Length: 142
Image (cartoon, rainbow, N blue to C red; front, side, top):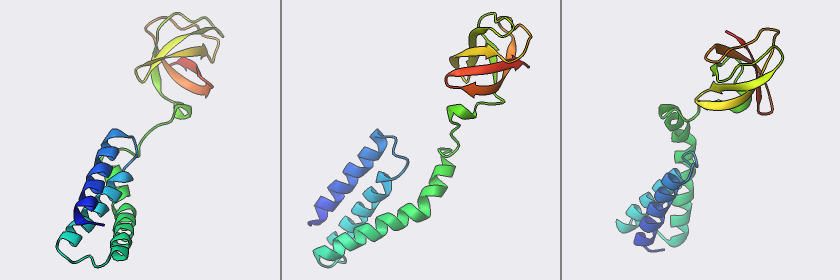
C-alpha cells in the first residue's frame, strides 16, 4: 500500500472516532495507520506485509498501553448505569401519597416514582432513591 493511503485511512479512522461513541478504539488504529504511513514515506516500513504487521502491532500496543489512562483522564470510565441509582437524591415533581405513584426528578430527568414507605411526599420535597424496578424509582423522604 502507498504511504498516502495509510495516512488517508488513519485520518478516516480518527474522524470515525470523533463521530461515534467508540471509547478510543478507532483512535489507536487511526494513529497506527498514520505512523505506518509516515514510516513508509521515510522508506523505513519495508515491504507491504511489513506495513500490515506494523499497523497491527502499533495499533494493538497503543490500545493496550494508552487506552485505559486516556479513559481515566477524560472521565469516560465513570459512567453510572440506571440500575445503580440507589442512594441518589431527587426532587419530587408532584404530590405522592403513601404507597402511591408520582414523578421525581433525578439527575436532570423525570422518572416514575413510588413511595417506599408510609409517608406522603409533597411537591418540591427532596427524596432519596431506595431501589429501582424497571423504570420506576422507589423513593423515601430524605
